[in-house]
Length: 194
Image (cartoon, rainbow, N blue to C red; front, top):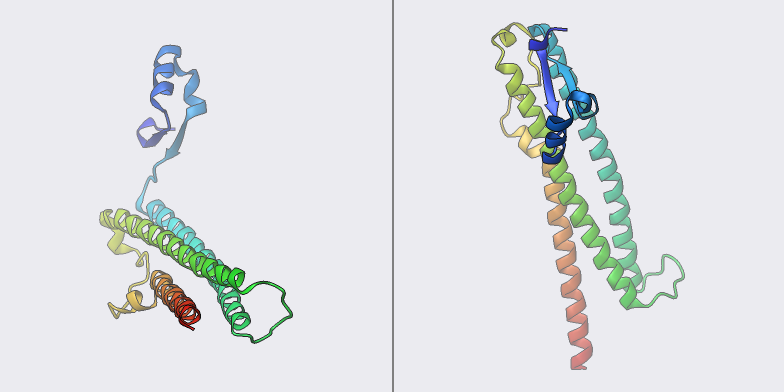
């Protein structure tokens, strides 16, 4: 294998580097991995497409699990609100303050999961952009199909992206939490003033 085409990814910490210098190359196999660089533009194109496809699969899986989890949280939120209002979905002996704490917990879980989903989707889209930039740095990229889809309307990706879905749900959970806490404080104030 041509040594000029190997990219050596080193995972040495400072101590391992000193051990490597002291004890010689016996640590090389255990602590370094070699990846061959693509030899031509077609290999670069295939590598970039495979990486983008991998990131898109991760985005799809994350969104599927995120929407499923959000559905459970919305259900828990509205069932708990119904129990607090006296609508009986099921017989319960749970105290109302405990249900109120649960409702706040559901809202906080919704906020945290939405923020986490937003961050993970942003990382994935940034990785895709980085791969796209790497591919477009090759002068032969003009002779190949477009590596990622091009949106005709500039705002379409902004409006309909999974990042914006997470942002919208963060706002919804903040509104739910604020409305619920205002209702709780109003109820407490009403009890105190009676």
